[in-house]
Image (tube, rainbow over all chains, first blue to last red; front, side):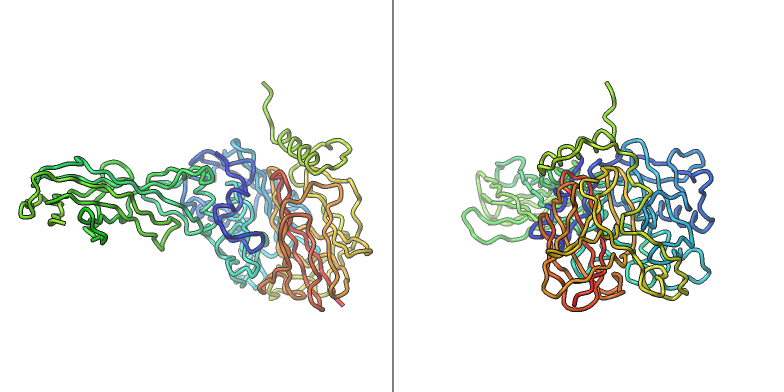
Length: 345
Length: 200
């Protein structure tokens, strides 16, 4: 499902207008296919200078390496159908350094202006055209990466008024020159990848979600069996998912694996929770398991604490009660490997 | 079944937007290319800048102030193939068409630096309004300023934002480069326009 600009901005609540800060807006035509390989070649008669070719190829590699998602990839191929041109034929309007067109799902075009192009506001200098790049030059790799971001479906990042978050995105409303901060970004920013993740999905259930996202998760817990005889064991299974909101696009409902989920317990009727330990990775994606041998009726819950390294919010599961028949507090049996013994609650 | 092309999509969106905005359009013009190679009306007389390398930002700007001609907006001349011209004016003043910077429009877009902007003089405290006469409705807007020729290398300061139409108070006395970003209704796209505002 393609997510519109307004929806993506809505992902980050409590922000409005120019003060907004969140995932890049998404372009209305939607994304390419997941991991679609978009092969490009140089436009005949408008081939970039060698140094610019190198920069564009590097940008394609950077897009592929830092997309943090199943976004389309870019590969140079002399037989590719997507044309990248350079020079005075660029259809970038009067003031454009570079421009693109995208025709989902078929392909794209890209243009970069030529070194020395005279604008109203100055003469274009590509840093790659110099042995020692002078101040005031534009990094062709950064600009090409910006264009590849647009091709993926990214709109211009909405910065804070102060631009203090300029480095959160390569796809920017205005391009910077050396040596201004962000002039030579060679990787998508976290707010670029946020939108790529929403539009294309993350590559793996264990992949980290961009910190530019603010995603709700839902943690559930079950016990099997739910009733045991004293000395018996029960396996508690937690399942962690991203909440399946429509605005979350392709990541809504995703199972989330490889995180730390902690099991807590308390005696039936007690108010204080005690951590039992971290739950192990389950056989099903997004599940976490831990076996227990409670000596008496015990309540359990699973906790996923909000991580600082990604854009997921923590959640706590509903409480699950394991009843124990023939209860005896001295009847806690030795656990097998990987089993955490729980004393009588 | 005929394919629903991007051209059809764009035309449909434009038509819907005009209807939603209550505009009296003179029929949907034909779209040509996502980004027209012709420039905004304000960019009239390019200057062959030859400033030496070493200038900070952006590129190598002209040694003198850019001579970007002011012009008025031809009402009702919106070409759906590209963002409409946007003009800035104070009440009773002549509108000045902004210099078009980065944009995403239809299935294309273009990236520019922070531009010097089309010159306009206003008095302190005056209310500035942005008009896209004949164009699609503005869904949201934001305006920021930087001092003189900083051109975005210094931290901008917000002048305002919100749902369209765009209007904001003149910055303090001085010379400012002001960027106004307009997001057009119907997910047509967005564009940033620049003015060099002298506030007296």
